Every structure is written in C-alpha cells, then in structure tokens.
Image 1 (cartoon, rainbow, N blue to C red):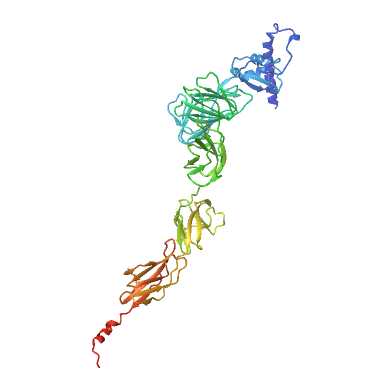
Image 2: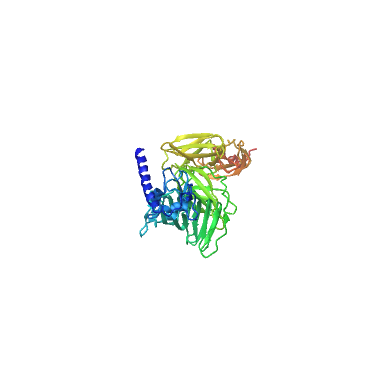
Length: 568
C-alpha cells in the first residue's frame, strides 16, 4: 500500500509539474481570474465522433490518462477541450470522460478458437498452405478459415464476443484491433459462404465496432445476437436478428437499414433487397422426447405453417455446436453422437430462406450399449405350446442381458416375466396362452444398462389336442370311424395306411366333423390315425394309430360245399 501511494504521489507530482509548465506559457494570454470557467464535471463532447466512455477513478488526471490511452503525440488538451474540463488535475471520481476512438492508441488483437470439431483449416495472412485448426489456436488479422462437412468452431474475441461458424463455411478475419489499452475492441469479419451466428457483448461505454461483411450485405452491430447465411456462390445473403438492433447495408445501398430483433433481411447481388420480414415463430416441440435411445438419432416435430424447410442443431453443455443440418421435412436424423446431455435447437425456414425463431429443448441420448436384435420368434408370430422360445443376437460390448415379457406394447402394466443377468441369448418363457410383447436390453461392463430394444409381439396358443379314435364299425361295404370332438379344432386330418409306419399311404382324407366314412377295402391289416387343425391352419400331432384288421369274406370257403350234390 505504501509503495502504491508513493507511486501515485510521484505520478501526480510529475503531472502537476508538466501541467504547470504547459499552463505557465499560456498565463499571459489567459483572462482575469474572474472570467475563468468554474470547475464542472466532465461532460459529453459536442461532436459526434465515436467515443469510449471512461469512468474517472480517484487520483486520475488528464495528463496520465492521455499518456496511457491516447496515440503518441496526442495532447491531453484534446480531452480537456472535448470534455470541457476546467481543472485537468482534478477530475471528479465517478464522472464520465469521453475519449474519441480516433484519438485512442491502436494495437493488434487476437481471437481464440475455443472449440473446434471436425476438419477446420486455417490459412494465416500471407500464407499459401492451410493447416488444421486446433482448439486453443489464436487467429490474427488476415487469417482465413474453412469448415468441412459437419465441422464447427467457436471463436472468442478479446471482449468476450463469440462467433459460431457452421459446417461448409468460409470466414476471413479481416481486422482484429483494440484501442486504448484494449478498452475498445474492433472486429471486422467476412463470411464468403456458409453460415455463422454472432453474439456480441453489449457495452454502453464503448461505440459499436463489430462488422460482419458478406459479398451482398454489410452488418454492423453493438451488443446483439444475429445470424447470417451466405449461398455457396456468395451472391446471396440472409440475416436474422435475435436480440438488439443490427444495421444492415445491402451492396450498393446508400444507407443502412435498421433491423430490430425478430426481423430479417435477404439481399442478392444485382437485385433489390427484400423488405424487412418478420421471422417465423419457433416450431412446437410437442412429441419430441427428452430421452433418445436409438442410433441413428432421429427427431420429429409438428410441421410449422409457412416453413418450407427446417434447421436443426445439437449443442453441448457449453453451447458448442456439434451437429447442424437443413431438412426439407420436420424430421432430423444424425448417424453418430456419443451418449450424453445435449440441447436441441429447431427453427423453420421461410420462402425467402430466412430462418425463424428457435425452439430449444434439453435432450439426453442414452443409446448404448445398443440392444440386441430379436431373432425368434418372428414379429407377430404364433407360437404353439406352453412355452415360447425367445432368442436374440449378442452385441459386441454386451456382457449380459435383461428381458421382459408383458401384455402391452408400452409395458405400462407390470411384466408377466422379467429376467436380468442372462448370459445366454435364448430363453424358454413358460406362459399361459395369450397375446404377449417381449423386449431385451444389453448390459455392458460397469454395469451399464442400455436401453430396451423395440417390443416384439407374439401369440402363444395351445397345441390342438389329439382326438382319440374309437374302434371302427363295419357297415356293409363301408367303414365308419368316430372320435371325440377336440376343443378349438376347425377340422381334422386323417391318414389311412397299409403299414404301421405310414410309409404307404392309401388315403389322406379331411373332414370338419368328428366322424369319417371310408369304402371298405379288401381283407388285410390297415392303420388309421387322426389329428386336429385349428382355425389358423395349425395342425397338432397325430394320435396313436388305430389298427384295423379286416378278415376274408366267408363265401369263398363255402363255395366248394355249394358245388357238392345234395343227397336225398
């Protein structure tokens, strides 16, 4: 504290001596003391020069401030005149001193790439060979950037302002400066193609000095948020203002057009610019789940009136753009994204190509370990018996599996069967007859439970019962068979054979009644068996074969006796 006070006293004494010498030379020409201006707080300069508003601190004087902030060989007298300061050694603390930007010391500045994803190339000013841009790299005046497919980056400037550059874009950093010991930053950028979002730090003390230029549109801002898109050929540009006001000057225009928040402007080289257009409202997010469990990640939302296309973006927790895409319908899909928490941003695009207000929603992606594919039974299959054989594939990173069987596709009701820690990829599910849904999930090391797979439907039906045959009845030249009606049977199938193995089939009759009449064959041993078939055409097993033995008729044996003459 003592050293600081001594330094302050020495600086002030030095300033006093210098000011006294400067003022002494003008004493003879000064009016009488009664005519001197009374001390007053610094006021705004009368001219309209862009100026920085400096807040006077205790101990400040014009001599020190001029030496610290103004260009070389710029006199403190300019500040005294512009601010009407009566006593250059006594500046009231808390008052405001205007320092014109034209008088401030000018120094080179840098921007930093605080986030880089994908292939982004950087070509330094004066260089001919581009190199990959990495997070943390610094950019200077004259540097140029190109982002590849699904490559994004975020630049941070000295005042905290940010530029978010989307995929397939080209940006040139034309000029990065600071004035007056970094008090006033100046940033001039050019967007040749692609799109970029600017968020400029607001400031009441410094003038606007942030410009984003396109071949067809020049944008100047002060503390605002806006977006710009440039066509691939560079001829057309569109700008949308989300916060604050932007001054938009189309190429060839004599004056800028003030663009308030919620409005946009489209400009094309050689054509009259569009009128200010109100941006489309944000799309509704009804139906967009907050948890996503599938890769590729697919998002659908209700169509927006007036939208011919849509912009969908995914950001990480720090606001860095990870995924960006234009979609012709209200459906976005991306192939790959790590599990995690993200922010989804959606907006509609009107007939002019202006992108509307954005809807945002936090989403969580939990798609891994990926669920197995169900292999058996087939979807909507009918399974017969008292057990359903369930089988599935084995994903590479799965160590075990979880399985559920329920009675509704959404599994709102408690499962009728639930298993976890399964090491095998199959399970026989013993269940009563009915309609069921089943699903399976993977568990990786950790343990890390993955999402459930898509529910699969199947029907478990009882096997059609085998009807027991009754002994056949011989009725003249016919054989009559009968059996008890089987529950659920729509028809019956029979086999009539000459051998017990039913290799030599003589007939395969069908009937809807629990009875059958066959023509009586010749003498010998025959075999008959029957099975039930349900209304869906599923046949149960054949029952035990019925052995049928037909004797020879008696009349051939009696014929010789008939030929012997009768004795009287």
